[in-house]
Length: 281
Image (cartoon, rainbow, N blue to C red; front, side, top):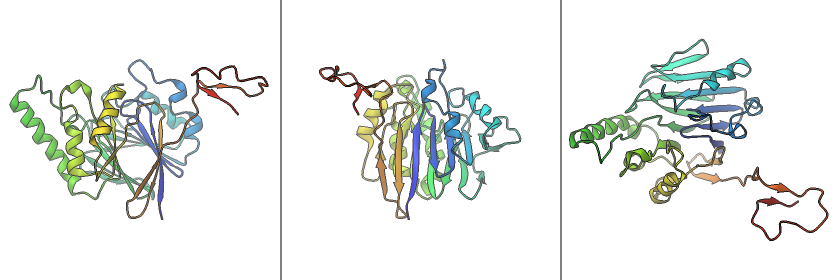
């Protein structure tokens, strides 16, 4: 028996993972200037599809959560799972590294360490293990950091990864590739692939630099780990995961929202000799 998941990318480190009537949302953010277009956001119509909604916030840095998520609880069955340094209300649960929670019969979560503020999350959703790194990364700047600072950052990162190496294999991982680090910006993600060996890794936290994520995916995929870049807001992947861990990945063909529809037009296609995105029925 296989398990189906829908993975959707929004912006920066924001993703959702849906299985049946359960939705998990990770580090949802609309952007520093609310630049995530309304048509690309999580909508009320989408939330209404689910019986259980879990919003995970790895830490309080403003690029990892948006206050909009707290408005969802007014109309939808939302539970918030947040890191230890964040406030939590009656519909929230706070986690420290090492904490484990059973949220319902479909979802369990374990919090792991970070090399910055907060935690990383390992969520088991209907048997599929999904890891969101938050700000767990090998944070170093080769052009600026001292040798000692780099060694300390390396040690902290490897120590934080050690429990994940020993844990059962991760099916899907979201992990930072931050171009602000300059050269070797991908050192953390490469080590994570080599040591933890997730079945699928999706780069995040690339600050709108789609080419960074795309090039990393091209170079980093290997026999043990597929790497796919999701760079367009509301881009989706459909995953089918068999009991033996074999994963089938489908990338849906989306209709371009800027396409010109020719419904009802009886003449010759006026755009036939152009490269405009046109949908002909």
